[in-house]
Image (cartoon, rainbow, N blue to C red; front, side):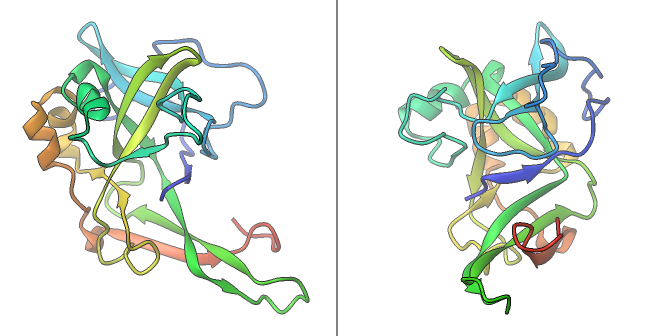
Length: 210
C-alpha cells in the first residue's frame, strides 16, 4: 500500500485551482511536502465556497483515532467512507510527482549487512504532476486526508499485487470533485500502464540514492 510519495512542486495553478492556500502554510521545519509519509502534513487541492485552491492537511483521515494512520481507503461502500464519498465538499486531489512501493523480496547488497527491500518509484509520463483521488475531513487533530486505492495495473501488480492509488486523468478532475457518488466510483480504476514509468529498486538507507 502506498505510504511513501513525493510532491516536488510548490502550489501553482493546476486543474483549475488557484495558486493560493485556504489555510496558512506551516512555517516549522518539520513541514516537508517533498517527502510524504504517514502523519506528515502535505498539500491537497479542494473546493470551498465555489473556489478551488490548495490546503495543507495531515496524511491520516482519522486524525490518530485508529491503531495506525488511515492513509489509504478502498471500500467506498462502507458507511464511514461512503459518508465522505457522497459529499463533494469532502473530496480532494492529492498532487504527486512520484509514489513508492517496496519490492516483495529482499536484496543482498553485498555489503555484509542484512538484505533489505528496495524502493520502486512510479511516475506518470503524460503528467509530471498527477492527481490522486482523495477524501478529507476535519478531526480533533486538524484536517486529515486519505488517498483512494483501486486494483493495480500491470506495471504496479508485480510489485504490489493488492492495490494501487487511483490516479485521475485531467479530464476526470471535475467529475471527482463535483460528480455524484456513482460518478466517482466509476473513476476508481487503475491508470493506463502505458502512460506510467517505474524506476528502481533503489536503497536510500544504504546507498546515496533517491
